Amino acid sequence: MTDALTTRHNEKMRKIKAARDKMMATKTEEKGLIMVHTGAGKGKSSSGFGMIMRCISHGMPAAVVQFIKGNWETGERTFLRERFPEEVRFFVSGEGFTWETQDRERDVAAAQNGWRIAKEQILDPAISFVLLDEINIALRYDYLDIDEVVDFLLTQKPPMTHVCLTGRNAKPELIEAADLVTEMTLLKHPFKEGVKAQKGVEF
Amino acid sequence: MTDALTTRHNEKMRKIKAARDKMMATKTEEKGLIMVHTGAGKGKSSSGFGMIMRCISHGMPAAVVQFIKGNWETGERTFLRERFPEEVRFFVSGEGFTWETQDRERDVAAAQNGWRIAKEQILDPAISFVLLDEINIALRYDYLDIDEVVDFLLTQKPPMTHVCLTGRNAKPELIEAADLVTEMTLLKHPFKEGVKAQKGVEF
Image (cartoon, rainbow over all chains, first blue to last red):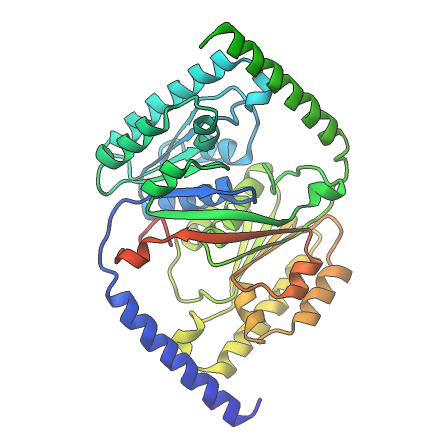
């Protein structure tokens, strides 16, 4: 690399750093966030669990409520229940994907039970971070009332508590209420080419 | 809910289950995947770390190489180094975000060092899953040669080893080579409203 290129690069990086430092100095507010991970792509739940890992590391007590993937044995559930029973409270409301149960009444009851637990955990001052995994599925099928959920989050969530809600097809009301919304978009998926769900990747 | 609605719902769910079972029966291939998490949204790294959590749970040895966020103290790094030194090999190649170092030569050397380590880990038969965190930044600035990286992944990666590459602005060559690509799209971000990066959420 030439000296001129190096100099130009270093100057550009100095400018970016200055702009970034100036921008970051304006970011002083701390608050508990309402976060939504939605879209058809991968990573909605796993990034929620990645944040749980960060919470454990920082000594921030967390809670997880899984709404739908009840009977599916997932790596993260086993991991958290076996290794971090003190740091993370783990609840499962559902009894499997809804197309496994084929019983709407039971699905509704399970979702309502999950939401009752979720509210308790969010209100608990000991808890810093609550992951409501796949709750968007329960909201989409109206197993839970979207207005009640949004109203609770906006009016009763303690100001410093973070809540992360995952699942595809997030309702517009929830997106409107959220502080941070990420859509995971699928650009390419190996299922299309005959590759099955695999350990470590999908579960 | 009326009986008719319940019946209709249950029938629909039975149909979905039948279609899904039929589809899943065709998914028999297992193979090590090349996965890319890109886009401007959140969750690229954290979903990679969520998969690391799954690997630990399944007893699949993993390795992480962090390309850029060298000096930044991140929850997941502390977590994995302190709690799972046996299960996850953790390497840091960079010395901070590139706009922190302001030295292109040093950035290139750090990226090349990271790639050397990455190749060793990918080739190691003891390792099932390799996370190359923020490697896309190094590729974007041409600290690493995209053709060399893609060629290595396609021709030298052991067939059952999973490799996940994260970072915004993934190069088209990498997207073309990958089995699974997810773009994290930002729909809403609290930085815009003066909220700073927070523990457990961003790091």
